[in-house]
Length: 77
Image (tube, rainbow, N blue to C red; front, side, top):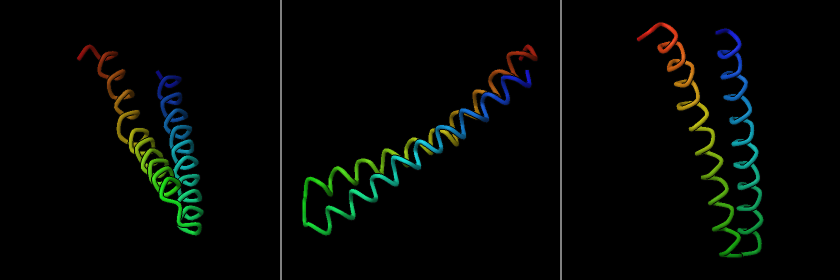
């Protein structure tokens, strides 16, 4: 069971890092678009920023519930 618990923690960390990368890339695109007054670039940057935030939120809230779910199924409950 400790292997699964550790795997969930690793998955949570990896998804958080991916989300941070996507969000950071979105911030860079957003700043570049504001500098050149590019409406399409602003939209793309905002989408990337929100997607990164969503991935981080998913990693922090949903992935740990996998660990709880597996512990409850192991205990018969």
